[in-house]
Length: 257
Image (cartoon, rainbow, N blue to C red):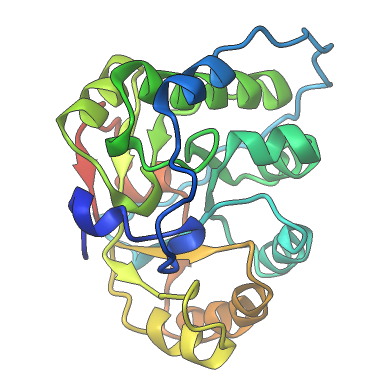
């Protein structure tokens, strides 16, 4: 598991790939103004009804939590089809701005099929590079749009790039959000190869949290084999709430069960 400090995280681009510095540089004050601008009040869609809770005890069963970041994307629907076919559940850390552009249809399907939603910021900004008001806006705006689209108040967040600090922890704590990181990194953003992704997921152990991205076709193509291989080893695919089986501490970082 790697939690990058600010200097390294600032070298990373969306999805984790190394990119040169942004030119022109981001104006934090302008970002805050844009994030906190008054938005029109759209009518709330029909709320999805989640399925009943499952009777799974990850203190005894071999559980693994597959988590998908940066979506929903154009391949998310195919991923949901695969998860449904295998009766597997997962957690999706969604980007608020992506939801706003694409609508909440995929999110409502996730909730209806028993998956869990987490806050992955509004614009995939590196939160440690923002002011306190900027961090707040990134989290609050995403909380708001997901609540409007699904009726769900998210209780987990994942800082983009894994970049966190005391200010991010405090903003998360005050909003009732636990920070969820990971202990199995598939590096699927870098190596767009389904076979490589499948082999890296094989490193999972009972209680693991696996980092994946549903915005990559190669990752979505890897999931059927991932589910097949781990199921053959007796694993159950669970949401984060199922993995821990208890309420987590807001603001605290978690990497595995």
